[in-house]
Length: 76
Image (cartoon, rainbow, N blue to C red; front, side, top):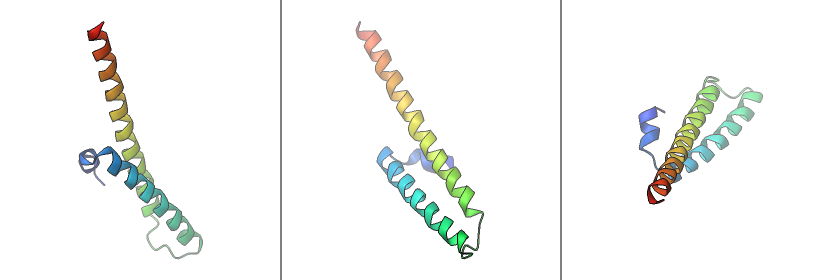
């Protein structure tokens, strides 16, 4: 998944997608243990996608908190 695709998603979509990817990783780990996973490169790719999504969520949280601080300073 590309950065621009992730940034276009809403916060709720990102949270839902993170949960889906984490469940997907668990399934892939079981398949890997039982030698049923054909493409083992999918595991690190899924972990990276989750990290990208969490990073975007965190960036949005930081921007919101900074905007709140600025608005409070402007009022006072």
